[in-house]
Image (cartoon, rainbow, N blue to C red; front, side, top):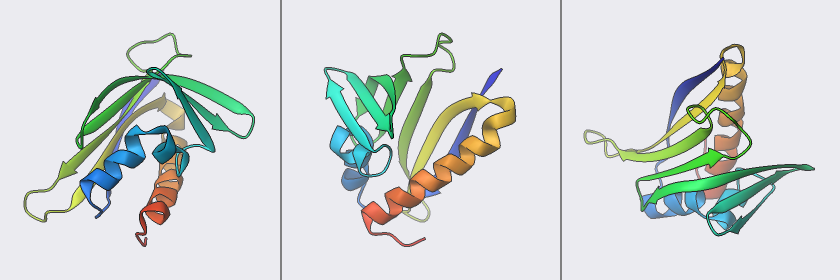
Length: 128
């Protein structure tokens, strides 16, 4: 059974710069996939020889982006979402990722996100 999980990363970069890396094919191709193309609201993500397609469900400028994977039958667990949050006390920019994985694969999924976010940090010029 697939379960939802959230991860939060602090990425102190301008919100606009971060949002562009989360919402555009060019930005996503810099860190999330080897290549990303878009046709209307359908994004195609390419890794090596694998391809996955997702529909851009919403993009709230500088706030959130949600994609629904097209290859999953379960509509409750077929999405991943990026939310940008500014913490009031520290003024830090946080990226909150909501994703889904099989219950026994959540740790692996978190590790994969950690790896992807390390690529994003490099693209943004941030150090770990």
